[in-house]
Amino acid sequence: LTVRVPDGREEPFRAKAVIDASGTTATPNPLGAAGVPAVGERALGDRAFYGIPDVLGGDRERYTGHRVLVVGSGHSAFNVLLDLVDLAAEVPGTTITWAIRRPGDRLQHLFGGGINDALPARGELGRRVHRLVEAGRLQLVTGFKATRLTETAAGIVVAGDDEVIGPVDAIVAATGFRPDLSLLAELRLDLDPAVESPRALAPLIDPNVHSCGSVPPHGEAELRQPEPGAYIVGMKSYGRAPTFLMLTGYEQVRSIAAAIAGDWDAARDVRLVLPETGVCSSGILEERGVACCAAASTKDSAAACCEPSAAGDGDCCGSAVPRLVQLMAATRGGCCT
Image (tube, rainbow, N blue to C red; front, side, top):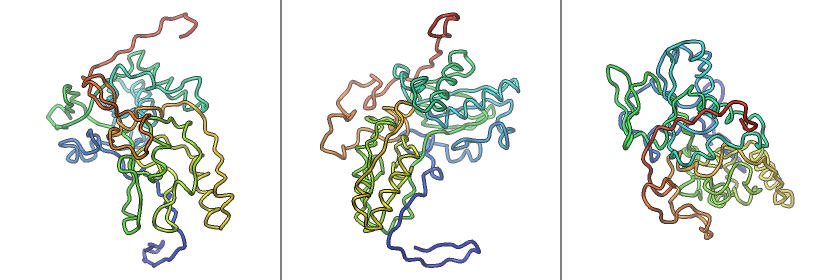
């Protein structure tokens, strides 16, 4: 390895093993569908923010009194939406449009597990956003896949296949992340071609099959690469799958450290109990711009979502017409509201 030390010098460094735990947050997914930037996206510059901006703090002026489009359907998007709603309550004229790729007839998992989530704070995120949509505090557009972004005198216009959003003043892309593999470019790697995770791990974390909490225990054996002593762990080991929990990463590293130390019994004894339910559920890969219809990386393809389907039925291998969904407000006084 070539390591840049704090004073700016570069030093060569040799290691028996390399554990890449560098994460993925520095390489966000683009707004465009199919994993590539939409036409005109690169030209937007700082008009589009990738990740979670400090809406109520340092980035406040970017969104105050503006028309804001948020794209994405995971925890990042939820946090952004909640902050923007708080800002809109303080500053009239701040409007929020929320666009997701999931079709309008497949919203049952959008808001997560709610009160049944084993992580209460995670469940509450989805419940709060659900209530805001029901109350009309933000506009939800479903089945939307951005293909072209155009700057006009009135603002940014975002076009999809059959729908146009805008003009808006600012865009937040909370569309997930992908691994940057340049650090490992000279090593022999065996990665799943769709998920970009270690090949043996891919069928265990496939978001079309597994939620955050149903990922089986795994460790050194599943993370091992053809290059001796090379491992990818943590969020980066999940590649483009958005279902990573930190508890998983801790156990991955423990197993690998045991193997490096020569304690193979401890390395193989992987114990992992994850909280069930949550926002991270089936169908997420397709929403992150990864084709879930790639060739299966395991012989067991029965659980894959790639059976033939009629176009327009809204599953991962078809298409759906974008539509605006305004959820009805819950009736007051009912026991289930």
